[in-house]
Amino acid sequence: MGDFRLRERRDRGLDEGGKGSSSGGPRLGTGFRACDGLMNSRQDTRPNILFFMPDQLRSDFLGCYGAGFARTPHIDALAARGTLYDRCLSPAPICVPARASLLTGTTSLENGILNNGAWLRPDRRECGLHSWPELLSEAGYRTYAVGKMHFYPWDASEGFQVRSISEDKRQIGILDDYAQFLASRGKHKQHAREFAGYHENGGACLSPLKPDEQVDLWCADRAISILEQHDGSQPFAMMIGFPSPHCPYDPPPEIADLFDPADMPPPLPETRESEALRPWLIANMKNPWADIDYSVFTDDQKAKVRAHYSALIHIVDKAVGRVIATLERMGLHKNTIVVFSSDHGDFVGDYSLVCKNFFMDPSIRVPMIVAGPGVPFEIRYDTVALSDLYPTFLELAGVSPRENCSFTSLLRPPREEPRTICGATHRGFMIEKGRKKLARYVGGVVTLHDMEADPGEQLNLADDPGWHFTRQELDAFLTEWQVQESIKGHSEKAIVYSAESKPELGNEPGILGPGWRRPYPFSSETTRS
Image (cartoon, rainbow, N blue to C red; front, side, top):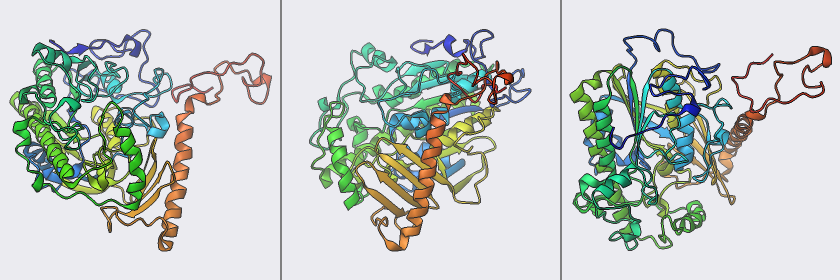
Protein backbone atom coordinates (compact mmCIF):
# COMPACT_ATOMS: atom_id res chain seq x y z
CA MET A 1 0.00 0.00 0.00
CA GLY A 2 2.77 2.41 -0.82
CA ASP A 3 3.92 4.29 2.26
CA PHE A 4 1.01 3.12 4.42
CA ARG A 5 2.33 1.35 7.46
CA LEU A 6 0.47 -1.76 8.50
CA ARG A 7 0.95 -2.24 12.21
CA GLU A 8 0.17 -5.84 13.11
CA ARG A 9 -0.39 -5.82 16.85
CA ARG A 10 -0.03 -9.39 17.99
CA ASP A 11 0.58 -8.02 21.49
CA ARG A 12 -2.84 -6.37 21.23
CA GLY A 13 -4.57 -9.52 20.05
CA LEU A 14 -5.43 -8.10 16.62
CA ASP A 15 -4.84 -9.95 13.39
CA GLU A 16 -4.49 -8.27 10.02
CA GLY A 17 -8.22 -8.37 9.42
CA GLY A 18 -8.92 -6.67 12.71
CA LYS A 19 -10.58 -9.59 14.50
CA GLY A 20 -9.50 -10.56 17.98
CA SER A 21 -6.83 -13.24 17.98
CA SER A 22 -8.13 -16.67 18.89
CA SER A 23 -5.08 -17.44 21.00
CA GLY A 24 -3.06 -15.40 23.39
CA GLY A 25 -4.49 -11.95 22.79
CA PRO A 26 -6.94 -10.06 24.97
CA ARG A 27 -10.58 -10.31 23.96
CA LEU A 28 -13.55 -8.04 24.50
CA GLY A 29 -13.96 -8.15 28.25
CA THR A 30 -16.87 -7.76 30.60
CA GLY A 31 -18.49 -4.39 30.01
CA PHE A 32 -17.68 -4.46 26.30
CA ARG A 33 -20.02 -6.41 24.07
CA ALA A 34 -20.66 -6.32 20.36
CA CYS A 35 -24.28 -6.24 19.28
CA ASP A 36 -25.54 -9.68 18.28
CA GLY A 37 -25.75 -10.22 14.55
CA LEU A 38 -23.45 -7.33 13.64
CA MET A 39 -19.90 -8.63 13.98
CA ASN A 40 -20.46 -11.76 11.89
CA SER A 41 -23.12 -10.52 9.51
CA ARG A 42 -22.24 -11.02 5.87
CA GLN A 43 -23.87 -7.73 4.99
CA ASP A 44 -22.70 -5.36 7.68
CA THR A 45 -24.97 -2.33 7.67
CA ARG A 46 -23.19 -0.40 10.40
CA PRO A 47 -22.01 3.03 9.22
CA ASN A 48 -18.50 3.92 8.25
CA ILE A 49 -16.93 6.58 10.46
CA LEU A 50 -14.76 9.39 9.10
CA PHE A 51 -13.26 11.61 11.79
CA PHE A 52 -11.48 14.84 10.85
CA MET A 53 -9.35 16.23 13.68
CA PRO A 54 -7.25 19.30 12.89
CA ASP A 55 -4.78 20.30 15.58
CA GLN A 56 -5.37 23.39 17.72
CA LEU A 57 -8.48 24.73 15.97
CA ARG A 58 -10.81 27.01 17.93
CA SER A 59 -14.42 27.04 16.79
CA ASP A 60 -14.92 30.78 16.27
CA PHE A 61 -12.47 30.88 13.33
CA LEU A 62 -14.86 28.81 11.19
CA GLY A 63 -17.59 30.32 9.04
CA CYS A 64 -20.23 27.97 10.43
CA TYR A 65 -19.45 29.28 13.92
CA GLY A 66 -19.88 32.91 12.86
CA ALA A 67 -16.45 33.91 11.50
CA GLY A 68 -17.26 36.19 8.57
CA PHE A 69 -13.59 36.49 7.66
CA ALA A 70 -13.10 32.71 7.34
CA ARG A 71 -12.85 30.77 4.09
CA THR A 72 -14.19 27.38 5.14
CA PRO A 73 -16.89 26.43 2.59
CA HIS A 74 -16.42 22.66 2.86
CA ILE A 75 -16.55 22.59 6.67
CA ASP A 76 -19.51 24.97 6.59
CA ALA A 77 -21.32 22.69 4.12
CA LEU A 78 -20.69 19.73 6.42
CA ALA A 79 -22.25 21.64 9.31
CA ALA A 80 -25.22 22.63 7.16
CA ARG A 81 -26.15 18.99 6.54
CA GLY A 82 -25.69 17.71 10.08
CA THR A 83 -25.64 18.69 13.74
CA LEU A 84 -23.45 21.54 14.92
CA TYR A 85 -22.76 21.57 18.66
CA ASP A 86 -22.46 25.21 19.63
CA ARG A 87 -20.50 24.68 22.83
CA CYS A 88 -18.02 21.80 22.85
CA LEU A 89 -15.27 21.95 25.46
CA SER A 90 -11.89 20.26 25.57
CA PRO A 91 -11.26 20.34 29.33
CA ALA A 92 -7.68 19.05 29.05
CA PRO A 93 -6.50 21.64 26.48
CA ILE A 94 -3.07 20.28 25.60
CA CYS A 95 -2.30 18.01 22.64
CA VAL A 96 -1.43 14.72 24.34
CA PRO A 97 -3.82 14.93 27.33
CA ALA A 98 -6.75 15.76 25.03
CA ARG A 99 -5.89 12.94 22.64
CA ALA A 100 -5.30 10.35 25.38
CA SER A 101 -8.69 11.23 26.87
CA LEU A 102 -10.45 10.97 23.51
CA LEU A 103 -8.67 7.71 22.66
CA THR A 104 -9.68 5.92 25.87
CA GLY A 105 -12.80 7.70 27.12
CA THR A 106 -11.08 8.63 30.38
CA THR A 107 -10.40 12.00 31.95
CA SER A 108 -6.83 13.26 32.12
CA LEU A 109 -6.89 12.82 35.90
CA GLU A 110 -8.00 9.20 35.55
CA ASN A 111 -5.45 8.25 32.88
CA GLY A 112 -2.67 10.39 34.39
CA ILE A 113 -1.76 12.26 31.19
CA LEU A 114 -1.57 15.91 32.25
CA ASN A 115 1.07 17.25 29.86
CA ASN A 116 2.82 16.42 26.60
CA GLY A 117 5.60 14.53 28.34
CA ALA A 118 3.60 11.43 29.30
CA TRP A 119 1.64 8.65 27.62
CA LEU A 120 -0.67 5.79 28.50
CA ARG A 121 0.78 2.85 30.39
CA PRO A 122 1.85 -0.09 28.19
CA ASP A 123 -0.29 -2.58 30.16
CA ARG A 124 -3.43 -0.47 29.96
CA ARG A 125 -5.45 -3.29 28.38
CA GLU A 126 -4.66 -5.54 31.31
CA CYS A 127 -5.97 -2.72 33.50
CA GLY A 128 -9.22 -2.58 31.52
CA LEU A 129 -8.35 0.54 29.52
CA HIS A 130 -9.24 0.06 25.85
CA SER A 131 -8.91 2.50 22.95
CA TRP A 132 -11.86 3.06 20.66
CA PRO A 133 -9.96 1.87 17.54
CA GLU A 134 -9.08 -1.37 19.37
CA LEU A 135 -12.70 -2.00 20.21
CA LEU A 136 -13.90 -1.16 16.72
CA SER A 137 -11.20 -3.38 15.19
CA GLU A 138 -12.30 -6.27 17.42
CA ALA A 139 -15.92 -5.59 16.48
CA GLY A 140 -15.22 -6.03 12.76
CA TYR A 141 -14.26 -2.55 11.58
CA ARG A 142 -11.24 -1.77 9.42
CA THR A 143 -9.46 1.04 11.24
CA TYR A 144 -7.19 3.65 9.66
CA ALA A 145 -5.23 6.58 11.09
CA VAL A 146 -3.75 9.25 8.84
CA GLY A 147 -1.62 12.21 9.91
CA LYS A 148 -0.91 13.34 13.44
CA MET A 149 -1.96 11.13 16.36
CA HIS A 150 0.70 12.21 18.91
CA PHE A 151 1.18 8.69 20.29
CA TYR A 152 4.31 7.54 22.09
CA PRO A 153 6.17 5.90 20.42
CA TRP A 154 5.17 7.96 17.42
CA ASP A 155 4.57 4.87 15.27
CA ALA A 156 2.50 2.94 17.84
CA SER A 157 -0.79 1.58 16.59
CA GLU A 158 -2.98 2.02 19.69
CA GLY A 159 -5.51 -0.19 17.94
CA PHE A 160 -5.45 1.27 14.42
CA GLN A 161 -4.69 -1.40 11.85
CA VAL A 162 -3.20 0.93 9.25
CA ARG A 163 -1.35 4.18 9.86
CA SER A 164 0.05 6.74 7.42
CA ILE A 165 1.95 9.12 9.64
CA SER A 166 2.74 12.80 9.73
CA GLU A 167 3.44 13.94 13.26
CA ASP A 168 3.45 17.38 14.87
CA LYS A 169 4.93 20.17 12.76
CA ARG A 170 7.26 20.98 15.66
CA GLN A 171 8.69 17.44 15.76
CA ILE A 172 11.05 17.87 12.85
CA GLY A 173 13.33 14.97 13.83
CA ILE A 174 10.70 12.27 13.30
CA LEU A 175 11.28 10.34 10.09
CA ASP A 176 7.64 9.55 9.47
CA ASP A 177 5.86 8.90 6.18
CA TYR A 178 5.55 12.59 5.43
CA ALA A 179 9.30 13.03 5.94
CA GLN A 180 9.85 10.28 3.40
CA PHE A 181 7.50 12.04 0.99
CA LEU A 182 9.47 15.28 1.36
CA ALA A 183 12.72 13.38 0.83
CA SER A 184 11.34 12.04 -2.45
CA ARG A 185 10.98 15.68 -3.49
CA GLY A 186 14.52 16.52 -2.38
CA LYS A 187 13.22 18.36 0.71
CA HIS A 188 13.09 17.85 4.45
CA LYS A 189 11.29 19.05 7.57
CA GLN A 190 12.52 22.39 8.88
CA HIS A 191 12.23 24.33 12.11
CA ALA A 192 10.09 27.40 11.62
CA ARG A 193 12.96 29.64 12.74
CA GLU A 194 14.29 29.05 9.22
CA PHE A 195 11.13 30.47 7.62
CA ALA A 196 10.71 34.08 6.54
CA GLY A 197 9.05 36.26 9.17
CA TYR A 198 9.06 33.80 12.06
CA HIS A 199 10.65 35.88 14.81
CA GLU A 200 9.70 39.36 13.62
CA ASN A 201 6.01 38.44 13.14
CA GLY A 202 5.39 36.60 16.38
CA GLY A 203 5.47 33.17 14.77
CA ALA A 204 3.61 34.11 11.59
CA CYS A 205 5.89 32.94 8.80
CA LEU A 206 5.86 31.65 5.23
CA SER A 207 6.47 28.03 4.32
CA PRO A 208 8.87 27.41 1.43
CA LEU A 209 6.86 24.34 0.41
CA LYS A 210 4.54 24.33 -2.56
CA PRO A 211 0.83 24.06 -1.69
CA ASP A 212 0.64 20.45 -2.89
CA GLU A 213 3.56 19.59 -0.59
CA GLN A 214 1.87 21.08 2.46
CA VAL A 215 1.26 18.54 5.20
CA ASP A 216 -2.53 18.81 5.47
CA LEU A 217 -3.08 18.28 1.75
CA TRP A 218 -0.63 15.37 1.95
CA CYS A 219 -2.84 13.88 4.68
CA ALA A 220 -5.90 14.28 2.47
CA ASP A 221 -4.18 12.55 -0.44
CA ARG A 222 -3.08 9.64 1.77
CA ALA A 223 -6.59 9.27 3.15
CA ILE A 224 -8.02 9.27 -0.37
CA SER A 225 -5.59 6.54 -1.45
CA ILE A 226 -6.61 4.39 1.51
CA LEU A 227 -10.31 4.92 0.82
CA GLU A 228 -9.82 3.94 -2.81
CA GLN A 229 -8.16 0.70 -1.71
CA HIS A 230 -10.73 -0.16 0.96
CA ASP A 231 -12.50 -3.27 -0.36
CA GLY A 232 -15.81 -2.70 1.39
CA SER A 233 -15.97 -6.12 3.04
CA GLN A 234 -15.91 -4.38 6.42
CA PRO A 235 -17.12 -0.97 7.55
CA PHE A 236 -14.22 1.42 8.10
CA ALA A 237 -13.34 3.91 10.80
CA MET A 238 -10.79 6.48 9.69
CA MET A 239 -9.28 9.27 11.76
CA ILE A 240 -7.46 12.03 9.87
CA GLY A 241 -5.29 14.13 12.15
CA PHE A 242 -4.36 17.33 10.31
CA PRO A 243 -1.23 18.91 11.87
CA SER A 244 -2.57 22.43 11.14
CA PRO A 245 -3.52 25.04 12.21
CA HIS A 246 -1.14 24.33 15.11
CA CYS A 247 1.80 26.71 15.28
CA PRO A 248 4.07 27.54 13.56
CA TYR A 249 1.63 29.67 11.60
CA ASP A 250 3.26 28.82 8.30
CA PRO A 251 1.05 28.86 5.19
CA PRO A 252 2.67 29.12 1.77
CA PRO A 253 2.72 32.69 0.37
CA GLU A 254 -0.10 32.18 -2.15
CA ILE A 255 -2.47 31.08 0.65
CA ALA A 256 -1.28 33.70 3.14
CA ASP A 257 -2.00 36.42 0.59
CA LEU A 258 -5.72 35.55 0.72
CA PHE A 259 -6.01 36.88 4.28
CA ASP A 260 -5.48 40.52 5.21
CA PRO A 261 -4.42 41.07 8.85
CA ALA A 262 -6.64 44.17 8.84
CA ASP A 263 -9.69 41.93 8.36
CA MET A 264 -9.03 39.87 11.47
CA PRO A 265 -11.14 40.35 14.62
CA PRO A 266 -9.28 42.19 17.40
CA PRO A 267 -7.90 40.00 20.19
CA LEU A 268 -9.42 40.01 23.66
CA PRO A 269 -7.69 42.39 26.08
CA GLU A 270 -5.38 41.22 28.81
CA THR A 271 -6.75 40.77 32.31
CA ARG A 272 -5.03 40.80 35.67
CA GLU A 273 -5.37 37.02 35.76
CA SER A 274 -4.06 36.42 32.26
CA GLU A 275 -1.07 38.62 33.02
CA ALA A 276 -0.32 36.42 36.03
CA LEU A 277 -0.42 33.32 33.81
CA ARG A 278 1.56 34.81 30.94
CA PRO A 279 5.13 34.46 32.33
CA TRP A 280 4.87 30.67 32.20
CA LEU A 281 3.73 30.83 28.57
CA ILE A 282 6.62 33.14 27.64
CA ALA A 283 9.15 30.84 29.28
CA ASN A 284 7.64 27.77 27.63
CA MET A 285 7.74 29.26 24.14
CA LYS A 286 11.44 30.14 24.55
CA ASN A 287 12.26 26.43 24.67
CA PRO A 288 14.01 25.01 21.58
CA TRP A 289 10.86 23.37 20.18
CA ALA A 290 9.41 26.87 19.57
CA ASP A 291 12.38 29.19 20.04
CA ILE A 292 10.37 32.41 20.11
CA ASP A 293 10.07 35.22 22.65
CA TYR A 294 6.58 36.59 23.35
CA SER A 295 7.70 39.03 26.03
CA VAL A 296 6.62 41.72 23.58
CA PHE A 297 3.61 40.83 21.44
CA THR A 298 2.42 43.79 19.39
CA ASP A 299 -1.01 44.38 17.87
CA ASP A 300 0.49 44.08 14.38
CA GLN A 301 2.05 40.73 15.26
CA LYS A 302 -1.24 39.47 16.67
CA ALA A 303 -3.12 40.47 13.52
CA LYS A 304 -0.51 38.73 11.37
CA VAL A 305 -0.68 35.58 13.48
CA ARG A 306 -4.49 35.57 13.16
CA ALA A 307 -4.32 35.99 9.40
CA HIS A 308 -1.83 33.14 9.01
CA TYR A 309 -3.85 30.96 11.39
CA SER A 310 -6.89 31.59 9.18
CA ALA A 311 -4.84 30.69 6.11
CA LEU A 312 -3.90 27.35 7.64
CA ILE A 313 -7.56 26.69 8.45
CA HIS A 314 -8.36 27.42 4.80
CA ILE A 315 -5.88 24.71 3.78
CA VAL A 316 -7.50 22.29 6.22
CA ASP A 317 -10.85 23.15 4.64
CA LYS A 318 -9.46 22.33 1.20
CA ALA A 319 -8.21 19.01 2.54
CA VAL A 320 -11.61 18.21 4.04
CA GLY A 321 -13.24 19.05 0.71
CA ARG A 322 -10.96 16.66 -1.16
CA VAL A 323 -11.80 13.74 1.11
CA ILE A 324 -15.55 14.48 1.15
CA ALA A 325 -15.53 14.64 -2.66
CA THR A 326 -13.91 11.20 -2.75
CA LEU A 327 -16.57 9.81 -0.41
CA GLU A 328 -19.27 11.12 -2.72
CA ARG A 329 -17.54 9.92 -5.90
CA MET A 330 -17.28 6.41 -4.45
CA GLY A 331 -20.83 6.46 -3.08
CA LEU A 332 -19.53 5.98 0.46
CA HIS A 333 -21.29 9.09 1.77
CA LYS A 334 -24.58 7.17 1.81
CA ASN A 335 -23.41 5.14 4.79
CA THR A 336 -20.70 7.25 6.43
CA ILE A 337 -20.96 9.35 9.57
CA VAL A 338 -18.57 12.30 9.30
CA VAL A 339 -17.25 14.01 12.43
CA PHE A 340 -15.23 17.22 12.61
CA SER A 341 -13.62 18.45 15.83
CA SER A 342 -10.25 19.44 17.33
CA ASP A 343 -8.12 18.61 20.35
CA HIS A 344 -8.14 22.18 21.70
CA GLY A 345 -8.09 25.80 20.57
CA ASP A 346 -5.48 28.54 20.27
CA PHE A 347 -5.39 32.01 21.81
CA VAL A 348 -3.80 33.52 18.66
CA GLY A 349 -3.28 36.81 20.50
CA ASP A 350 -6.21 36.84 22.92
CA TYR A 351 -4.94 38.09 26.31
CA SER A 352 -1.53 38.46 24.56
CA LEU A 353 -1.23 34.68 24.59
CA VAL A 354 -0.72 31.99 21.95
CA CYS A 355 -1.33 28.25 21.90
CA LYS A 356 -3.44 26.76 24.71
CA ASN A 357 -2.83 25.27 28.22
CA PHE A 358 -5.20 27.57 30.14
CA PHE A 359 -8.97 27.25 30.57
CA MET A 360 -10.30 30.35 28.86
CA ASP A 361 -12.66 29.70 25.96
CA PRO A 362 -10.20 30.38 23.10
CA SER A 363 -8.18 27.45 24.46
CA ILE A 364 -10.93 24.98 25.40
CA ARG A 365 -13.83 25.67 23.02
CA VAL A 366 -13.58 23.55 19.89
CA PRO A 367 -15.84 22.75 16.94
CA MET A 368 -18.01 19.67 17.00
CA ILE A 369 -19.91 18.73 13.85
CA VAL A 370 -21.58 15.39 13.12
CA ALA A 371 -23.15 14.70 9.72
CA GLY A 372 -24.37 11.71 7.78
CA PRO A 373 -27.37 9.45 7.29
CA GLY A 374 -29.87 9.77 10.12
CA VAL A 375 -28.16 12.76 11.73
CA PRO A 376 -30.61 15.65 12.25
CA PHE A 377 -29.97 19.04 10.67
CA GLU A 378 -29.79 21.24 13.76
CA ILE A 379 -27.74 23.36 16.11
CA ARG A 380 -27.51 22.02 19.65
CA TYR A 381 -26.86 24.48 22.44
CA ASP A 382 -26.25 22.04 25.29
CA THR A 383 -22.62 21.81 26.40
CA VAL A 384 -20.73 18.71 25.28
CA ALA A 385 -17.14 17.50 25.64
CA LEU A 386 -14.55 16.43 23.07
CA SER A 387 -14.19 12.97 24.61
CA ASP A 388 -17.91 12.35 24.20
CA LEU A 389 -16.71 11.04 20.85
CA TYR A 390 -15.41 7.89 22.56
CA PRO A 391 -18.86 6.50 23.47
CA THR A 392 -20.25 8.00 20.24
CA PHE A 393 -17.91 5.92 18.08
CA LEU A 394 -18.66 2.81 20.13
CA GLU A 395 -22.41 3.33 19.84
CA LEU A 396 -22.17 3.77 16.08
CA ALA A 397 -20.28 0.46 15.91
CA GLY A 398 -22.71 -1.38 18.18
CA VAL A 399 -20.24 -1.71 21.04
CA SER A 400 -21.18 -0.81 24.62
CA PRO A 401 -18.73 1.33 26.62
CA ARG A 402 -17.67 0.31 30.11
CA GLU A 403 -20.12 1.15 32.84
CA ASN A 404 -18.10 3.92 34.48
CA CYS A 405 -17.20 5.84 31.31
CA SER A 406 -16.93 9.55 32.16
CA PHE A 407 -18.43 10.74 28.87
CA THR A 408 -21.77 10.60 27.04
CA SER A 409 -22.55 9.69 23.43
CA LEU A 410 -23.42 12.65 21.24
CA LEU A 411 -26.18 10.53 19.74
CA ARG A 412 -28.17 10.80 22.96
CA PRO A 413 -30.65 13.68 23.41
CA PRO A 414 -29.61 16.74 25.44
CA ARG A 415 -29.87 16.48 29.20
CA GLU A 416 -32.56 18.38 31.02
CA GLU A 417 -30.10 19.56 33.66
CA PRO A 418 -27.01 21.64 32.74
CA ARG A 419 -23.98 19.47 32.05
CA THR A 420 -21.08 19.66 34.48
CA ILE A 421 -17.68 19.33 32.77
CA CYS A 422 -14.43 19.17 34.71
CA GLY A 423 -10.85 19.09 33.48
CA ALA A 424 -7.23 18.91 34.57
CA THR A 425 -3.78 19.59 33.15
CA HIS A 426 -0.39 20.26 34.69
CA ARG A 427 -1.42 23.93 34.86
CA GLY A 428 -4.52 23.46 37.02
CA PHE A 429 -8.17 22.39 37.18
CA MET A 430 -11.47 23.66 35.79
CA ILE A 431 -15.19 23.11 36.12
CA GLU A 432 -18.08 24.50 34.10
CA LYS A 433 -21.73 24.04 35.06
CA GLY A 434 -24.63 26.02 33.66
CA ARG A 435 -22.20 28.36 31.83
CA LYS A 436 -20.48 29.26 35.13
CA LYS A 437 -16.78 28.45 34.83
CA LEU A 438 -14.31 28.14 37.72
CA ALA A 439 -10.57 27.57 37.18
CA ARG A 440 -7.78 27.06 39.70
CA TYR A 441 -4.21 27.37 38.46
CA VAL A 442 -0.76 26.43 39.65
CA GLY A 443 0.57 29.53 41.43
CA GLY A 444 -2.73 30.44 43.06
CA VAL A 445 -4.70 32.23 40.33
CA VAL A 446 -8.43 31.51 40.66
CA THR A 447 -11.01 32.67 38.12
CA LEU A 448 -14.80 32.53 38.06
CA HIS A 449 -16.74 33.74 35.03
CA ASP A 450 -20.34 33.95 33.95
CA MET A 451 -19.92 32.76 30.37
CA GLU A 452 -23.32 34.07 29.25
CA ALA A 453 -22.86 37.61 30.57
CA ASP A 454 -19.09 37.76 30.02
CA PRO A 455 -18.06 35.48 27.12
CA GLY A 456 -14.71 37.26 26.82
CA GLU A 457 -13.87 36.39 30.45
CA GLN A 458 -12.92 39.94 31.38
CA LEU A 459 -14.61 40.20 34.80
CA ASN A 460 -13.31 37.76 37.41
CA LEU A 461 -16.05 37.04 39.98
CA ALA A 462 -13.98 34.75 42.18
CA ASP A 463 -13.77 37.28 45.03
CA ASP A 464 -17.13 38.93 44.44
CA PRO A 465 -19.29 38.46 47.61
CA GLY A 466 -22.37 38.13 45.44
CA TRP A 467 -20.86 35.04 43.80
CA HIS A 468 -19.59 33.41 46.99
CA PHE A 469 -22.14 30.58 46.99
CA THR A 470 -21.64 29.86 43.29
CA ARG A 471 -17.88 29.59 43.80
CA GLN A 472 -18.42 27.42 46.88
CA GLU A 473 -20.75 25.08 44.99
CA LEU A 474 -18.43 24.74 42.00
CA ASP A 475 -15.38 24.30 44.22
CA ALA A 476 -17.08 21.53 46.20
CA PHE A 477 -18.11 19.72 43.03
CA LEU A 478 -14.61 20.08 41.55
CA THR A 479 -13.02 18.69 44.72
CA GLU A 480 -15.37 15.70 44.67
CA TRP A 481 -14.55 15.12 40.99
CA GLN A 482 -10.81 15.26 41.72
CA VAL A 483 -11.14 12.63 44.44
CA GLN A 484 -13.36 10.33 42.36
CA GLU A 485 -11.16 10.55 39.26
CA SER A 486 -8.00 10.01 41.33
CA ILE A 487 -9.51 6.82 42.78
CA LYS A 488 -10.50 5.65 39.28
CA GLY A 489 -6.99 6.47 38.10
CA HIS A 490 -5.55 4.00 40.60
CA SER A 491 -8.17 1.28 40.20
CA GLU A 492 -5.58 -1.27 39.08
CA LYS A 493 -4.30 -1.27 42.70
CA ALA A 494 -7.67 -2.37 44.11
CA ILE A 495 -7.72 -5.23 46.63
CA VAL A 496 -9.95 -7.98 45.24
CA TYR A 497 -10.75 -11.53 46.21
CA SER A 498 -8.94 -14.10 44.14
CA ALA A 499 -10.57 -17.11 42.53
CA GLU A 500 -8.65 -19.31 45.02
CA SER A 501 -10.32 -17.73 48.06
CA LYS A 502 -10.73 -20.16 50.97
CA PRO A 503 -13.48 -19.04 53.37
CA GLU A 504 -12.18 -21.26 56.17
CA LEU A 505 -9.04 -19.12 56.49
CA GLY A 506 -10.80 -16.09 57.92
CA ASN A 507 -13.63 -13.60 57.64
CA GLU A 508 -12.00 -12.14 54.52
CA PRO A 509 -11.33 -15.26 52.46
CA GLY A 510 -8.14 -15.39 50.50
CA ILE A 511 -6.73 -12.20 52.02
CA LEU A 512 -6.02 -13.28 55.61
CA GLY A 513 -4.61 -16.66 54.67
CA PRO A 514 -0.83 -17.13 54.49
CA GLY A 515 0.83 -16.85 51.12
CA TRP A 516 -1.99 -14.87 49.52
CA ARG A 517 -0.80 -12.75 46.59
CA ARG A 518 -2.69 -9.72 45.47
CA PRO A 519 -3.82 -9.90 41.81
CA TYR A 520 -2.17 -7.09 39.87
CA PRO A 521 -3.08 -5.25 37.83
CA PHE A 522 -6.75 -5.44 38.68
CA SER A 523 -9.26 -4.35 36.05
CA SER A 524 -13.03 -4.08 35.94
CA GLU A 525 -12.94 -7.20 33.77
CA THR A 526 -11.50 -9.29 36.62
CA THR A 527 -14.00 -11.87 37.83
CA ARG A 528 -14.77 -11.50 41.53
CA SER A 529 -15.38 -14.70 43.50
